[in-house]
Length: 363
Image (cartoon, rainbow, N blue to C red; front, side, top):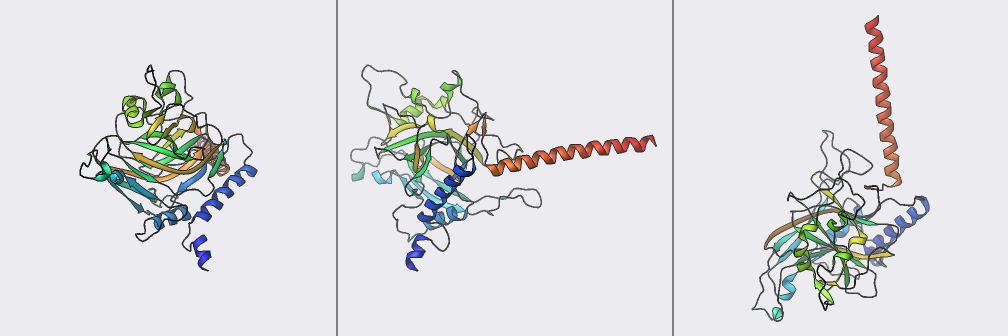
């Protein structure tokens, strides 16, 4: 009984359920979805019972880190810094349907918040060789034996709410070099910036204004003797004008799915993630566009600005994008067909009513 509770916690969640759930979904799509571009695969979604249970367990004060860990935070306190962050689970109403009065339910979400400080603590022995400070991070649980997306999915979809600051999205993937992390960036909030209502195919002109940092953007200037790596924060500061928000408009179209009220969806193509190691860009970039096996996902704030921050996260999905739209699941297609039938039947009924009204007027 004790072993069973460890493998399959009574309240849901657990690394074994995470492993089985991911494999079951991938195999199901492999056999049932014969389309060239498959529908989305949820990686984490706090509207799901098991993901919510894992987060609750991670927030327990007496929790001990297991083999695959849980949701956890880190900051520059490990080098004597003054930044701090914490997590909180807002459970909402856990209801994807609309209320009777037409308003949307509040979804469950993870709130990661805290204070960033770039001050170096000279009094701490941990900061003896530190030249800069100011970072905070949150990391997801690991996928046992990874999440083998292979080359079937082209982008990461993030449903979240930000405070307008620039956050790095970290992908820990299976690689020969354990310190390698692929990073993309998102900017949210109400800052004045260009917003794409749909993801368009990049042209030669728009390629240089991608929402994430692509491999051909690593060398801003070609020095006589290039360094083996570049500082991510300095690169981010130099190329800040090239980072723009790329959220997909939900409108009233069920095929795209509705981001919960007050939240946004960001879609980051895998091929635009930059390869980093220990917080620095690798000079030799390797595109993340082959057989992708995700071990974990995280977010980092390191924009060099002192002050409070807040990021609310609802879900993470691996998706495909076709002609500017996220490819829906087979269930989404069924909903789309039903939606179109309702529109057609409504139009036919309206025409019948108008014909009947004309007949009554003539008589």
